[in-house]
Length: 410
Ligand SMILES: [Zn+2]
Ligand SMILES: [Zn+2]
Image (cartoon, rainbow, N blue to C red; front, side):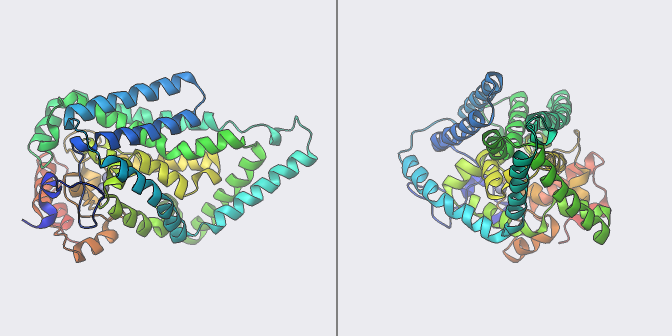
């Protein structure tokens, strides 16, 4: 069996102290409890800073406590004194990660546009009367609420479909390479854990922007300049490339895929990066329910920081994020036979399915073109997990022999 198809638990060595480059992390274990709780504490702190209302803080607290209980039921809890040096090392290394990401995508333009918007806001304050619409606070929380509830409605429809077909979900997963991850929890709680994971991941990406907007109180003047810039850029793209390509370029920014893949590789090679940043994305069942931005909770916050989401238009950032989240959810339905089904995964040749079933590779996060490097580094596109997934998808009418044949060609 090639290395990439070995079950994840077999990959994980029992190690002490700081991580070594050759080690691979794919699932949590009992020793990670303190790192996991540390990651949830970061999320709780971020939500506390982002939202003023007591009810949203209470909801976050309940959701995070639920996930802690689920972790203990699934993985157990064992003390590990290496946790403190792992956290210290991870925190010291974190600024380097942000700087590397910023160097990769060189955000000169968004910073300049934000500078122009701030100048416009200052001019408006200088020359307009205080009752002017342009000087009123922009209600970014209302936009957040509308977009978040839109995606949450979609996520809840998927939740209902999974609960209605809970026995099917259990049967597929127990016949899959994921069966070892089903221990300690009934299928209903696995489904609920995935739902809560998706909700929190969705919010986490937006936490840096929500904190920034809460602290700087954007006006309609600032929002108008930032939104106008985003619309003009999309307009130019449509003129040059046509609507479908322009929209795709806006949703999937090709220039950052290498940086995302590189960070993703680091996430699976470092205990801190996996347990604190990325692991939540792999801890829930491989279903659309848990997906948001291809990232764990703290990693989502990291993306919000490293990609300077807070400098953009609130309307644009929140609407594009909603579209990306919906697309990411559909692209993570790896349990065939239940809504929103796996046809999209099969048709677009998303080998990422294998990564969620416990294989390190493919690590590429840009779909088909990004798997070429994985194949070069030893990924076998015809591996056992791919064949199992295609068989189950075919059984439920979500893959035919021709698309299955195409799927394994990279
Ligand atoms: Zn991963
Ligand atoms: Zn994923």
